[in-house]
Image (cartoon, rainbow, N blue to C red; front, side, top):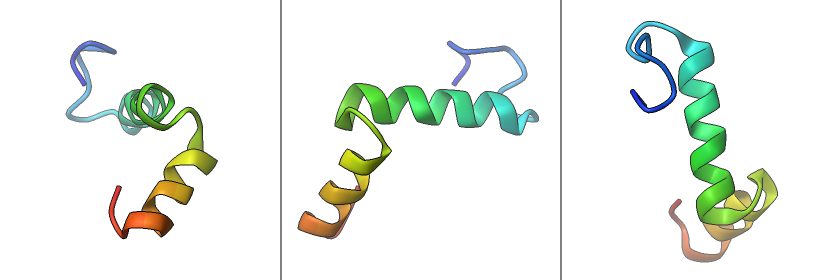
Length: 43
């Protein structure tokens, strides 16, 4: 998360930004992440 901002430990906005970037890179979008979770039972 530090790749997004130095305040990653205390700033929820930084954590959300990092999380959405992770989802985009791994699953394409939040719907893709949800579909994967439903298909295999984990994310």
